[in-house]
Image (cartoon, rainbow, N blue to C red; front, side):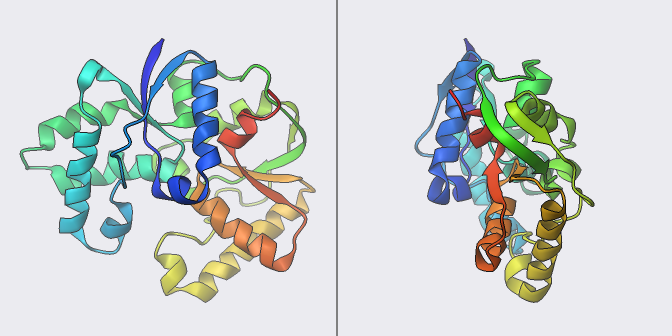
Length: 243
């Protein structure tokens, strides 16, 4: 059994708990021994992005306590955004502090779900996964630019029976969410969501899939408001379908 601690982000915990359960389902199916620490909270990204460095540092310190180096367990999350925060922003919070060494020991063990499956475990197909239809894929900014994730989710999705990929135009363009950006610059954020959805619709896809629920929540709000004929799905929900 492969020892895995799961980190469930705020968005998933509060709004999409079924995505968390589906990630557990997939991890257990490929031979992982999954553990969940119910004391976990946030990665600190909202405070950090809003400029509250001291408060974000406290959250980062709590993250270290919630995920100790016990047994060198992997830490896996269904969010590239949160993984990117831990990997790339924690040094600014924890560097030159008593927690720096603990963070340096933890950082190499933190993975987004698809890169863990493909790059660590060497898995490119989830046995039994099936979803009929066509999908197009949205590369979230955090996955692509912060974590370097592009091929892993596509390889896993292409292994789902009944599912066909159709790439949209400008797949790497931001969806417009960007955390507080969507609040501070609402009109620009909505226009970016519109552009992304229109590119997805132009493919004729049934599903718009991504690694990040934050992007999908933003896009789905536009889709629902405008009554567009496409469904958003987190990749964990796709991989857990049909079995």
